[in-house]
Length: 121
Image (cartoon, rainbow, N blue to C red; front, side, top):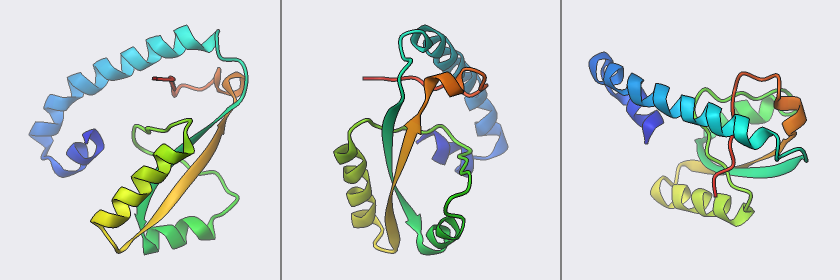
């Protein structure tokens, strides 16, 4: 919802969201610091998403390369939750292709990163 708002709202409305986004980012940074000591083992997360066919083909053509996201990313440790997102997206927009991103997170490799991630149950 936040990402959609940022893309569709005008500049004035977007500026009002800046304070919310900044506060949320600070909270994520704090949680990341708290959790980084406890999470030392690699783990897998899943993200279910619908993509227009052309976006999917662009993604497929770059298979094996680094992929970056320019938004907050919600994932789950449960593959079936990601599948539910894919199924819902396909029902809403039959032109979309369902994609499940499978990401292995190595907390030790992310310590130097400026992008925090947190586990929220």
